[in-house]
Length: 358
Image 1: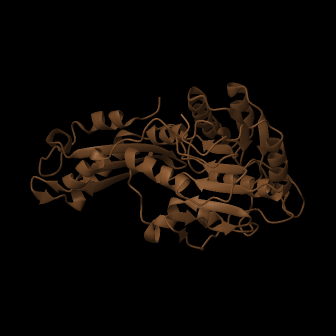
Image 2 (image 1 turned 45 degrees about the horizontal axis):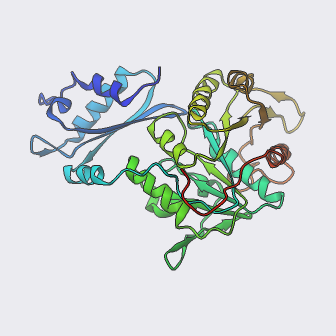
Image 3 (image 1 turned 30 degrees about the vertical axis):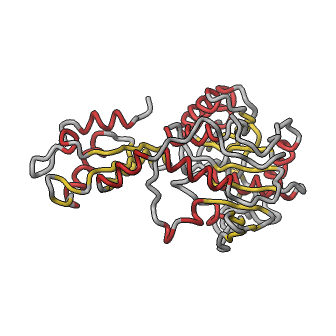
């Protein structure tokens, strides 16, 4: 069963610092977020910046972090983040986003790329799929919806800043793709600590306040996992079809199945599964081997009754074109083209009007 913030809170009940402070009992724990990543679960714990009238000490934060790690063996990282009560109260006062999704450009077919956890190459699949669709002649855009783990601009080696046209953003353009990402609004790789309300505002602003050039396809790189954040972002785009990304690894396949079940419970149309890092080809003898095993995509497909759309090989360091784009002539390039043509032939429903959709 997936670890939840409530589980973490329950585990914190007996914790006390060297000075005898019990932060949970004292009301110093503000917020907890649990998100899956390739190296295990990551937990962010927001705490008051002052305990018993004194700034929270680094040693107390480290002790708290270590305590949580010991309690949960599948946790890869625990960050304890101090925040003033004023900041916490201000965040709570922001109205939650309404039930309607952001206004989207008319006539665009939206494809959400999802995964059960981080580290399976979801963003790499997103940009290469978008690039392949653009190569078919369609006007294509990429919206990086992974507010906390944005990587699309880096994978595309996109350095052009966002420009303004009046009060609207003009999205940078690279490789025939329009791109919008939270990366453009965060300085020096600073971490984003937003929760639900501000998350919704960021997604809405990037979609609605961007001067899109009438895209015909839009690829949405969604946050990984099945937690509140992933569910919230799913709900912002109810009409987007979804592609599920996994690796051949059995553990990755199991969490991918959960992500697929979550998407289906939200009435998301699942187009199929893409297996990334499926195999490696020897550049000299053409021998193929399988570092992560075999069968992950088939397991997910059978469980969810969806097709295996593609199996993408490893792209060895030094082979990649633009950090994440496969170069011309690479084996994976034709696989992405086949995937794009497969999606092109599907009856995806385009948006009909530039209005909020329920």
